[in-house]
Image (cartoon, rainbow, N blue to C red):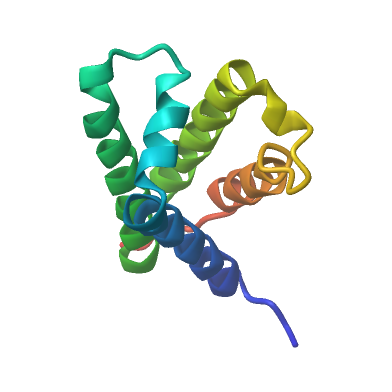
Length: 122
């Protein structure tokens, strides 16, 4: 089976969609507890959590609707930001058996590759 560029794009869209919908629907309290460990004000936790989930869903829609160099670069910056925040505030994730931080490396590579090799649609 030949893997097309669009398949890679849509797999990333599925990842963003899942990461934006699954946490607020199934692990709300655990997600808020993790955000609290970042040292953010309690009143900001739920709004920031919902904002990050909405951003993830927006990226999924953007990929499906109109992928662009700007979109890939913004996604790469988001993955980098999320990764640094988790690495600093929740360093146990480096040794987590499911490797949540390490998995961001190939995702980041895909995003950078897509951004560097994307022809803009008119």
